[in-house]
Image 1 (cartoon, rainbow, N blue to C red):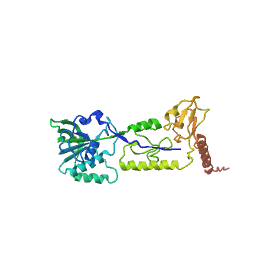
Image 2: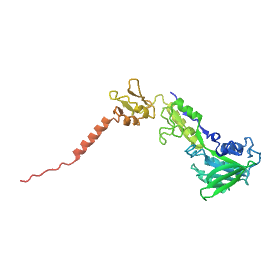
Image 3: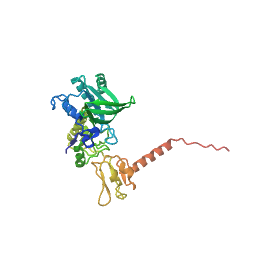
Image 4: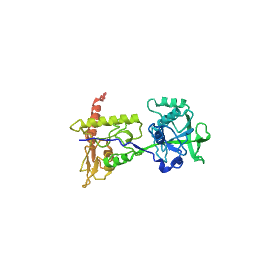
Length: 340
């Protein structure tokens, strides 16, 4: 007996493939991850910020949020961490360079985790400018300065701002390792490409395959605290499974009446857990370890050849009949008086 914990992380949105906002074309357009590398004391510049084009310290830095996220042309989902990363890097810039003008263009600032809303207010009070709106285009002059044209949705103005550097907050994509895990382990993925769990609230770490658990960004965009908590949950699930010598399996699973099965393959196509298949004799076979008793195959069977153990149709019919008879017996009978 064994257990597998899938923690394949994420990949950065491949903005180099689209050259959005002229990234990869203009040297002074970088991403938040590249900015973090420059801000790191052990980074290539020792924690100081220099323009890629000429090595000068930028005086105006513009950050653009939701690049590759919340867009029908890229990823429709929110990547969750981008807003807080931008706020953190903006604070570091203001601490290192108090006179630097830092501007953040955003659609919505989403700081939903514990203490993050208060942190957002602190950054605003630190003279970081917030502009709600979309950046339309970025052009470059002969000195590699960047000309940003944008629309402010709050004031309704068209803005033209000259900046020394633009930082793009790129989204999170399912990692290459996640795609490989889907093929190797036979896991399911959601519409966004991340792994799916059995139930988002009741079983957020468990997959359709017993003994395989997911955590962190393998299941979707997460920040570090949330990733740690899901990792601990997955580890506890694996430890609980491995601590027993025998597997306890719920007996409420599907069963097939072979005399009624017509081998239509409908149940096989609809089962999300891969627990039912049609054999060479055109008879549906249920894998008792994979079946979760969801009942999808039962409702889809045109021949009514599938039942759920302990919840068979005959049992429900007998129960309903018994309830009906007991109700009838409690109804008082009316007496009829005949007068001569």
